[in-house]
Image (tube, rainbow, N blue to C red; front, side, top):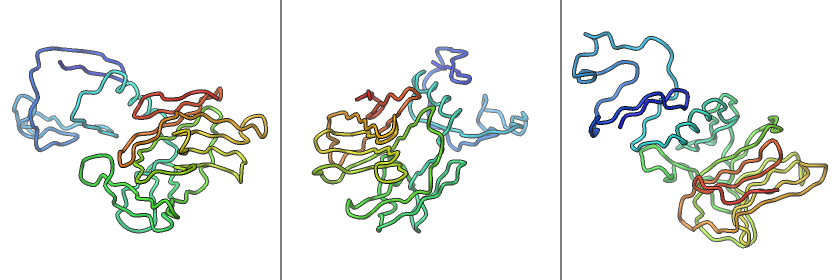
Length: 239
């Protein structure tokens, strides 16, 4: 079954299209010979005139919910995005329009195998001693909401707590702490962000599995409600 979506909404469906097969080579902006009823591209003037951006190809069918989320994410976009795909140097490039490049510190291991099984999909390896990535001021207005998302694969168990990320103006001043607690699991912790000096936190009370990649997202909405997600599933909410 073939379904077409426009701005996140289905606009047409047809069945009986048959199974798909390998397509090589591929191209964006025009059609190679063999495409479109096996007619030559140049003979049929199939080159696109206009602007195009963010082409994404998947080897699986996306659900309507995922497609709607894909569209919504494109409307907002992150204020900072770090793929950690560098293979050398000390600069952690921010691919968002903000251009807030970070700096690898402490001997971060670059080009570590990442969560995606494809060439060039690498991650940053941290030793749990002094490795980290310093970021410039990510000084945006979060009054309408805050979100952070990342992949993580712990390589050792912990005692106490460790941080995966954090934003702060000073010690215990306007803190947003994203971490892992050996008793509480994944935790989202706020300090001095509400009513002057208030401390609030939520946790999902489940320990990450050592040596396994998981996707983590944490959000705070404009009403001050926090949510933790693991692999796309809501595992804790509150404040």
